[in-house]
Image (cartoon, rainbow, N blue to C red; front, side, top):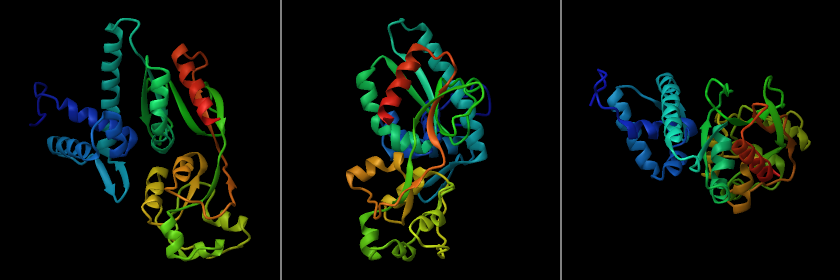
Length: 294
């Protein structure tokens, strides 16, 4: 099938799967949202790429990102599907579900929100919560987003910001890494592969906090998204500087361990932002998120 004219049938299911995958930039999380497997998501994306004759995602190990063509398509598809959802909501009885759309970082969506979605649905079955995951600072009005979880200083002109919580940063890894490199002191971390991120709290700052001044920090993979960094740590690829809000569940479940107690205070905090006059449903979502962060 090709899309060379306006009468060509649209691959609607593949576009729906692409829209979810583009928001999360993670096939497993997208599959969870859609109720299908990761491999099914991958097949649909491959099908859409074949139809369009262009690559939509770049794949580099655990890291997934949109190509320029993928970004352009994602923007249009997100708006189109949003319009369709709103059109459907408008013709439903008023007692039906109400859509609330939130924007947040892919890492927050995958590591913090996704494990809690069932709790929210159980408490508020009449609110249809939709997530737009993006590393870009989304214009809420232009993108027709109701609210957002943002990571920053709390100052966004024209928006009301409610503080959710701060966080700390410390080394985390799989237990196999500790055993493999016989890690017993902070200096032992220099023997292991270190994973690097684009956050202000870097390895040099952490080693300085434990008294190792100007250590020769080994170079290692730098992954821009925390989801990819933590997945690499979970699979035993190295040691990451984990942000406490994103690694709490993995630490509690024993999937990751924190070899040392020394933590850095993060430069930024999490905030819930919205217009100054949020809807009743958005207030419900906001209050639930505030409670979960607390």
